[in-house]
Length: 532
Image (cartoon, rainbow, N blue to C red):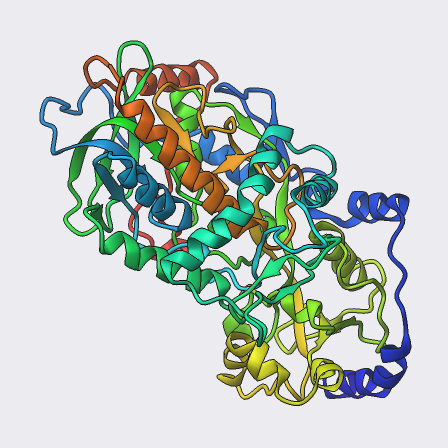
């Protein structure tokens, strides 16, 4: 590695003068088809059961959808209701918290049930920024075009329109709640570029933007009359005789008993699925990101969209071993750090869309054999962080990237003087549960917001649109779920949809080998596990 760093340092002055060309659409298509993990043969299969039967998805997802529930519907007693509420929100991240705040403001009684603690979510871990077209040289229309282009022109137009139209209001809302954004001396908000953006519209709070958003929302939720159940994930939705969602069954992780919630409307805000480790990739996601909401909604009758596409963030840590998979924010490249191979050469413009960047890194490390070997047998690409200091002045990294600086300083890596090694990490679930612009699903009374939904990002998400997504659609879900409460009517609580789903699994010849949702990943060795 030392010799490789010397080659990188020897080319730095030359690279500073170099202007990397943007890739043509044909070049992008070729890189994606040849090197992006979504196109790798044998990694997906068609679903055998459910509303999206016949659609392809990675085996790791299919294993969850083609699994039996944790509840045996004929044996579970639904006569005792432990909690009653107007709006049940499943998940305590950015989407769930924002939905709770808005639903409460609209007069609804709200209950949040979350797997871990309120705020333990991918939102807290997001770093780079949140997009919004609120500058004089920008517009929601330009933002719309960027989003659709980044998504490969597969996005659902009505969802993109909602995303970009609500964005400026979301920034105002956050600031009014007390969030501190980065600002210029005259008070204007700092905005920067992200991959695939035509304007500087990324609003930031250093490189812990998601953490600042989540802390702001979490504090506000706790200051309001909103009930919160922590360490109580949902293991099954409830429906009535007509298929309307009527609440859910919770599992207390501490006492290991079940609780029944009767709700007039229910919002799934369970986030992503990085802990499935699709194709064996490391992940930047938090410990609870196991696609639970998708499993629950699918069994209840919801369609899935874009479940054949995963976003691998191009810059996940690949060295040192202790932080493999952790995110290295795109803001590092936005500030000018180059991607450099083992020969000391740049090979791509650093702010192409994430799918293209990831595929190009994989190409360097596999096909071109120009990856940098690590002491533990991995391969990666250099991210030339010291260049940021040369381009913008000493102290820029400490000012703009304090979280990144601390992440590496713990391992005696001084990123102001040493480059860091990166490789793609499983980062975002492009697909999810089908919704409309009101966050409604095909199941009456069931809403979905945030990363658990599909359609807004198409086949690839741009930086800064995830934090925007969870807030725009979290707020929308809160509004429409609260409004629906006023005329919500339903029959008795049942698990009829689970019975039907189990019957489909049996008819498809799927054995009772797996149970879902996963709830938490198990990283123990197979011989150390208690069960099969």
